Amino acid sequence: MEIVKEVTGSHGGHGIERMLEESPPVAMKREGLNKSIKFLKQSKEVVAEIMDRITVNVD
Image (cartoon, rainbow, N blue to C red; front, side):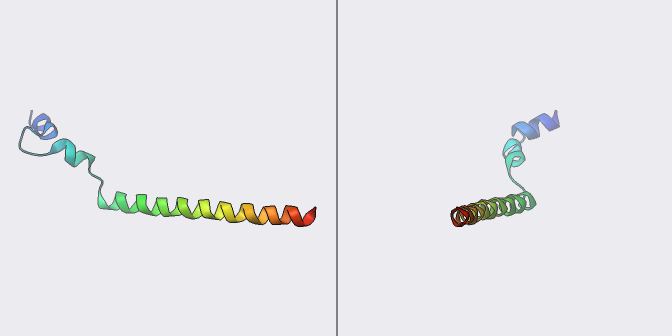
């Protein structure tokens, strides 16, 4: 019963809100992954431009 009270918040806590909060290590990993995704997208664009130049120069 105590667990149910804690999770539902009827015990004075903010059970569900606390469960939904992102921990600092997870937030840091998410931020790092987002930076990596951004970098990879930029790299993809650069590679596509280089490939276009190669194709134009070969023709």
